[in-house]
Length: 134
Image 1 (cartoon, helix red, strand yellow):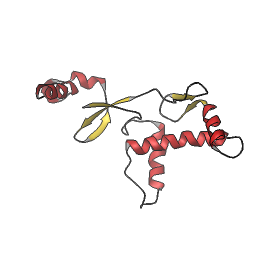
Image 2: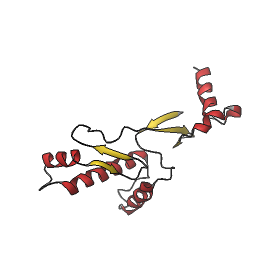
Image 3: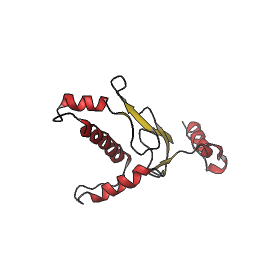
């Protein structure tokens, strides 16, 4: 099954993943969870909030924090593309990452998988099978 995510899957080779995994391992065991896309999304949101907090003028009250977020401009979180926040654009990312769910695991989607439909190896075959059985 092909789905889209607001963060890349954890099997991709991106700079931020090493930092994310290291941060996950530094957590106390009683609050540590297995690395997952939801945790990655929270980590990235925290990194973005940290950037804004560094730019706050004075105490980080809500208005100062909102102004700092709007003033971030273009920034990089280590995902291979830059993000932008400003007074007119309040959504840092307009990206989605296609993913595949196979055997209960979410992995990166590769376009070449679509052509591997013979013998049940490709996504196209899986989609065909689901359509045939409805």
